[in-house]
Image 1 (cartoon, rainbow over the protein chains, first blue to last red):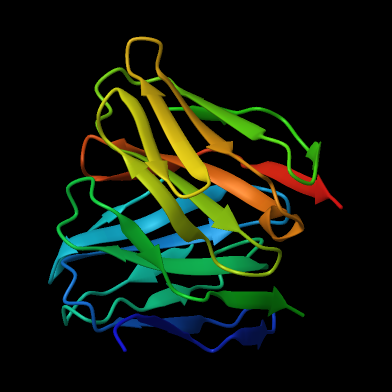
Image 2 (tube, chains in turn orange, purple):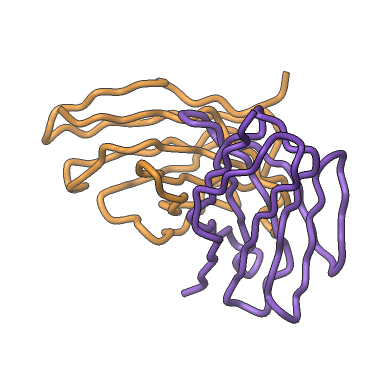
Length: 113
Length: 110
């Protein structure tokens, strides 16, 4: 089955730690995206990548970093510089990255202890 | 900064009624518009995409787009309790990425 996988489903972090969230897709999509969702809120764009080895900051990139070394993978690192990282993190992809339909992974719920 | 706004909820409708969800956007150059459904604790799932002015129907769902008024809506006919969810409107941002509205929570009452 083609789709987007995210791991882990739940993640607990101590303050001061960096953590990396995994996102993998086997849809052969060019573009991938990371969003953050806080309770009762919409989605806010963290980073996006339209092509391998290239990515752009979204609206709330501070305290986050990404890499895009392979087409199918777009991991997100939440660094200790992110002051309030507890949230639901969603990875998504689109075929071409030019306004076509976007599909989401199941999400990772991150909690800072 | 592009903005996408949705009617504030929660919206409650009785089972079998029509639910009407509205979305307005600030950037006149937007070309692609999407409606997603999100159940509590789950990721968004695509319901409809619309690119041209007018109506687009898919089963019980109808998306309506009016680019001149910068307005896109979603109608759900014969609403079912299983339609109870948060509905997110998304608009493309110059073909680079997407801007999402805050969502409207819909409750369909049996």
